[in-house]
Structure formats: structure tokens, C-alpha cells
Amino acid sequence: MPKRALNICMVSDFFYPSMGGVESHLYNNSQCLMQRGHKVVIVTHAYGNRQGVRYLVGGLKVYYMPAVIVYSNASLPTFFGTFPIFRQIFIREQIDIVHGHQAFSTFCHEAILHARSLGLKTVFTDHSLLGFADASGILLNKLLKFTLSDVHHAICVSHTSKENTVLRAALDPQQVSVIPNAIIAEQFEPDPGARDPNWITIVVLSRLVYRKGIDLLVVAVPRICQLHPRVRFVIGGDGPKRIDLEQMRERFMLQDRVELLGSVKAADVRSVLVRGDIFLNTSLTEAFCIAIVEAASCGLLVVSTKVGGIPEVLPRYMVTFAFPGEDAVVEALSQAIARVDDRPNHPELSPQRFHSQVKKMYSWHNVAERTERVYSQIIDIEEPPLIERFRRYYGCGLVAGKIFCLIAAIDFLIGAVLAWLWPKEQIELAQPFASEKYQRTINQNRLRHHHQ
Image 1 (cartoon, rainbow, N blue to C red):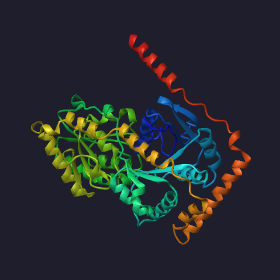
Image 2 (cartoon, rainbow, N blue to C red):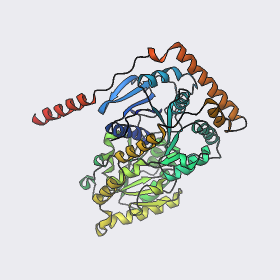
Image 3 (cartoon, one colour):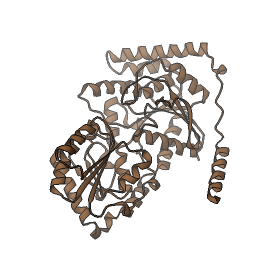
Image 4 (cartoon, one colour):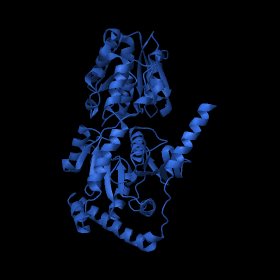
């Protein structure tokens, strides 16, 4: 148990009901931190009718704030417009640490800025890799430099991601920790009986977008089907590239060998994975890739492009790598198909062995424990004077530094005005969640259900 129970606010634009690695990380890490005695609340934007305050399993409290969505679930930047509501939440929940997730999240950057104006401790977790040459990368890198100039600690999900973030934000590497993603291995048990013995099934589960290498998939599928008559594909996921897959299937008349499932719910991921022999990931950039861990846990041999932090994730006997090119992906898949054909003669490729190895390697309880260590390092750091914060922002660039100083100064003044309009003492504190009563009720319901 922790030496000191903390009140933590996780902030990101990306959370349930949306699905993805960031959403999974937020939910599972928060649940494990709560089990370790901390209080955790999550702040995200509203998703359709899911607005206001909601409680999830275990008493995890989520604030679904109103926001205008501009692209891929990211909210419209307002700079200072979210300050009043963030301040209310931080004070109501008596927050000690504000932990922002994902460089693409507007809420994350704004929450960290406002938290620093209120003198709160801040942590940032980067789940992505970005380049240095394209316009979007340059703009996001400058924004990241602004946010991380005044953050107490940064976390990355792989060593490659750490190198990328340190370079992008010009950070001291000692200020950045590597804490990987994880899975709940019990939810991804192998089921050899679910496979069709007449086929070698290749499973793809991904958002169907350019970054996930769907263009590579479109050209590789017909070539593999031509080379290997016993191979079929099961592709789950949705996105703008789905139309390309449908056109490919029609053009090569592969309706009986390429199954497009569309969007797959989180609860159904395992049932799709266990149908397969091989899992294919064609990402063009990836900081970690939680999908290949889930696939390996279900006993699938993995074929993946060798990009980003992916080579750090699994042992070599579980994965065959390919450079992100058409010929390389086809060759790697052919090698994997040959290994699957010969699997009975290779006990190291046993699905149950894959599962037990992954279970030992990745645990959300371990992730929470390591995150807790980061919190304990920063919680008692003395707050620097305002002039020191300005000095950090000023070092962000000849022009950008002055703009960042101006933004920080305005935010600090808005904080002072809000403190005058709504004094801290007049804000009603949130009642603590009755976790013991909740757990007692859950146990009683389980017993009642068992007896019935």
C-alpha cells in the first residue's frame, strides 16, 4: 500500500465509450491505483448522450465535460475557456496531481496549464510517436515543448517513445520514465477449439486509417491469397480506409476469403482473436501496440511491421518482423504461415505457452505501482516562483517563448480572478465514494446470483 493516499485527476480527450490503447490505459491504470488506496477521477469530453458525472465499475468517477469535437475525438482548443470548470473539479475533488495523457489531446494540455497556474503537481504520459519534418509534427512538437516545460515528470510507454519525446520537447532524460502498457491476461485466454482446422486464419484488428498501414494491407492480402490457397483473413475495425478494403475484395473476388467485421466491441475482441492462427499488424508508426500483446496472449503468432517501439514489446519467437513495405510484409507472412503449418513440431509455439509468458510480462498492477513511484517522487517538490515558470517558457523559442509566457501570465491572472469570484472556501467538496459499501453490495449480489 502507498505511504500516502493521493487524489489524482486523469485527463484526456480519449476515453470510453471510445476504444483504443489510451482509453484502455486510463481505465485499467486508474482501477489499479484505486485498489492501491488512491482516489482517482477522470476528466474527458462528452460523448453523445454521455454527459455530466458518471461512475464506472469500482467507483471510478468520470466527468464528461461539454466540448466541441474537431477531429478524431480531439476537442477544439479554447486555451482559457476550460479553466473555470477545471478549477471547480480540482478543488471539489481536492486533487493533488493532474495526470494528462496523449499529445493529441487538447484537454490534456489545457488541464496541465491550468493545474500549474493553481500550483498543482503535474505528470504527462505520451502514447504516440511524431516526426520532425511535416507541418503537423512541427506544430505538435512546439505545443508539447510548451506543456512539458513546466511539468514535473513525463512518462512514455516504450524506450523508443522516450527518445522521441526527449528530442521533441528538449527534455532532461532523467525527467522521463518508461512505463509500458499492459493487458488483463485473464481476459485473453487461448481457445484452440475456436480455430477452423481447414484454414490458416490471419486476423487484423485495427482502426482502418492511414497511420495503421491499411494501404499495405490492401496490397498484401490478394498476394497472400494467391500464394497460399489455405489462407483466409478476418479483419475487424472501422475507419476511412474500409472502402479500400471493400474495393480490393470485390476486385480480386475474395469474398469467401476476406471477412470484414466492421467495428468490434471491446468485449468481443477475444472471440475474434481466438479464431486466428496469425495476427497481422501493419502500422507505419507505433509507440507500443497493445493489440499485438492481446493477440500473443490468445496464442496467435504475430507478424508486425518493425516500427517505433514494437520491437521492444514481445520476445522474438512470438513475432516475425517486416519493414513497412509490400514485399517485406508478404515475405514475413509467408514465413509465419510456414511456422504455423509446422506448429505441432515446435512446442515453443504452443498457444498456452504464449499466454503464460505474456501474463508474466505485462500486468496493470505493475504499471500502477510504477506510476505510483513517479507520484511519490514529485508530490513533495517545492513549488517554484512564478518568474521561474516564465523562464522555462521563455526558453521555448525566440518568438514562441514570448507567446508562451503571455499565455501563462494570462492564465495565472484568470486564476486570480476566479479565486476572487468563487473563493475556494465556497466550493462544496465532493463526497468520497463509499468503496467498502460498494464492494460489500457486489459480494452480496454475487452470492445471491450463485445460490440462484
